[in-house]
Image 1 (cartoon, rainbow, N blue to C red):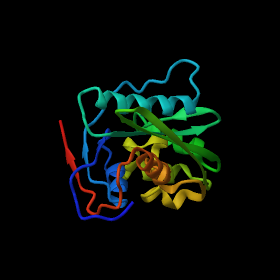
Image 2 (image 1 turned 180 degrees about the horizontal axis):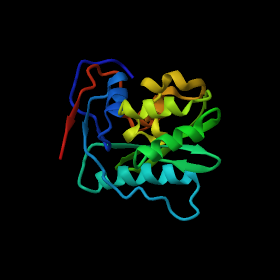
Image 3 (image 1 turned 90 degrees about the horizontal axis):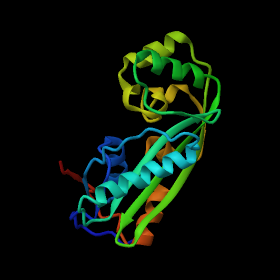
Length: 206
């Protein structure tokens, strides 16, 4: 992809996540934002990989089917431990309990990315492993009070204050944040959507 100064949107991001917007801007993809707002309940017997893939695909198609003419990029991230999906904590007790279960363990972070355009939907899956050191109950409670875990899968943010918990990470750092840039760039390249355009600013649509 050749750099260019154009800032005209080339993509619609089906997510209101500021982290995903920042990551798209990092690789210079001017975009607009339209939230998908879908039911994110897992189906009975659905595997974590099938779940995140279905969520990403459904988000992309939901926005595309509203009449969006730009290619639509969507992503879904979940934390998995012992084959159990850990989404966003519902309250303080749930958030602290999640951190307690992750303490001293290695968990998976799955992020599926989908791109919907005139040809249909293409999908990539990023799989990363994250190991937490042993956490005290006091640390888990104090971290919750930062406000950071409330809207994060697994109840933590790798790029935030929870960085002090992470003993090791294998895979995609940007994938753990919520948008794996290698897989995203591959989808964009195949679809002919340019990156490295500079700026990468986002607009919003209601």
